[in-house]
Image (cartoon, rainbow over all chains, first blue to last red; front, side, top):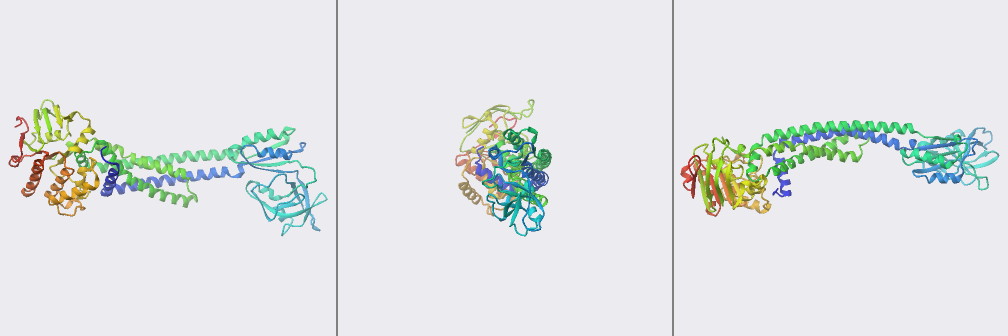
Length: 367
Length: 216
């Protein structure tokens, strides 16, 4: 094509401005197509994202390992090995449960306590107070209420040993059950405790099964059935199924909206170009090749299509955010916009090719 | 130079519009194609303009067998070498006057800035005094044809083809257009005009009688 690209773009922009009715129609069609895509498929994509996000929450990623009698549990070195399993974010090992009670005169409430055999995970925050030193205790938020302590202080009686309470903690996410416990840092001189309750958090839900296999292998608990692992595989599966179904639905809705838009763009261009037949004949006489005519027509359509996509995206996203409280993922937005812009412009190819293929002499002859 | 050799054109084999036509259109000459209505004047013009392909025979432009070229090559040759003037000015009513003139150089890769200056100079030379940014809807037939003439002459093409360029014009406007075409030929271009106006055709360097008669 001997026409320079920058001149072709300028010419197409001027033509798009000159033929306002067609341009406005194309903007409206593309805008409607884009908005419809976002309100249907975009909303579904946002919902899918929310489901996937919930799958990625700690609940389905948490592995709870209980070692029951007659096995004594797993030692601290095994906990260290658990930490090095691929995909494990953190490990929390706790000793066997026992009752402790407040040393305050008259208080007879027993609460459950466990030895803390590993660092606290990020989900556990101590406020007020500080981390316990050997022999000291921190109490969970629920326990603090049960013990009717306004401030976490004083001491707890642990099988005749007094444990200073140095803080209260609250656990979030999937381990809120810890709030019902007292966590005691074992004394430096006391015998190393065995962990009978271990929590592991996987970085991704799909890694849970592999981590469980490794835990079973590393724990080497005997008898085997004394090691009980609890996960939430059903939730993971359900979320995967849901996200798959939503994804499928979103693709169908997007396809439908885009197909309707493509047909409308093609019809608009066909009508517009049929009224410009002499335009095409003149251009052919002045030296435009068929490919140049098609390229100019596509560029002319691309301007309103691009404007329609931008305006439609703003409108569609606003609607989805107001409706769902969340936007579809950025990947969906970019992919949907590119798809609509390309298919919208490509829809002008058949009418442009038909118009360019017409015999210019027949068009130009004056009867 | 345009050279027609044994040129025949027929929409149906049994009834050729013309047959065995030989003629040379030399640079610096103006040629009138005359004949009765339907004799094939415009057809011959469009053949020379490479918008139709002959049934048989050859069209050579500057020694190149133009009729054998691919469609895009013929379009390129039109863009590079030819200017067209149609019977009705055939301006784009949606575009400004200056844009209509500039379209004459759009497809031949001429630099934009110089072309615009040249277009404005041409409009001024042919007495189109209205604002060039306005659309051509308000122009008279004569003014519109002068705008079309500017479009044809923009970029100084070596060949100008005019199909009944004054068929719809009053005498004064027709004189302006004819003078411009003949003057352009005198300046060295090859100008071919299809016309039924034998009085003005006589002003051309040569006349080709199209139809069943042999060329002059």
